[in-house]
Image (cartoon, rainbow, N blue to C red; front, side):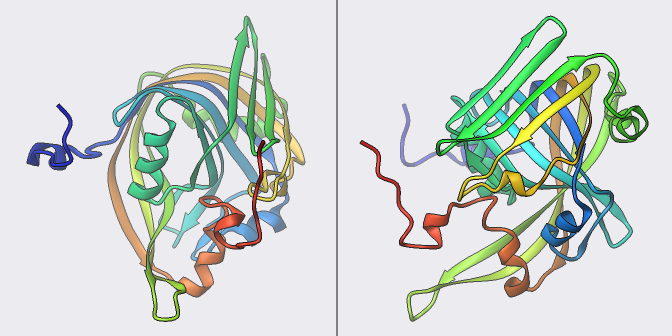
Length: 282
């Protein structure tokens, strides 16, 4: 029987070795404006290439909850010329386990996650489509067609490392964590802002290359259209057998005032920053 008081073993096992197993869906990449990406990437990270990568997948067997859908847009970034990893602008989740996924990621690891209102992935033979909607806006609409990449030379540079099958691949992702405290005048201040990197081990067991078609749109809360599509590079339908986040590295303390403006939109909506923002639904 559930209780508000849990045994010590539950505390010990909380989010231990979080894993996102049985992932299936569309991986994609497109060229984006370098000037925009550099503007949106917080220091001390540096942009590796003017390319947005992403995926729309079903997380079939997460270790921390029920199955859910997840979409992400990210760039590859460099830290101190020592580490290259993914820096995500936002992840959208939907489905039975989405709440657990948002809590585990955002509160547990600093990952910029939100809940989507609608999320569909459909495959038919050698083609597939995906849509993500939130607050009345279709933020992402994409399609994959099995075959050659749109831009083979560039796409191979992006995808080849991820297309190696049945082998453990080590990857890193960059996030920021912080503390928030209310002060005497009632306002909240951010402190202890840190750049961290999570390290994961992933095994991919299926990878089918193809062409990408993608459209992005913005809402007041989710400016996906800011990450403008200049040229699709390619996409793939793929399946991940296992993916385990096994370590978090604390890389650097950063200036809260300079860094927090980069971090809020991917995690929270305008209504949390502007009391005049509201939505009325009948």
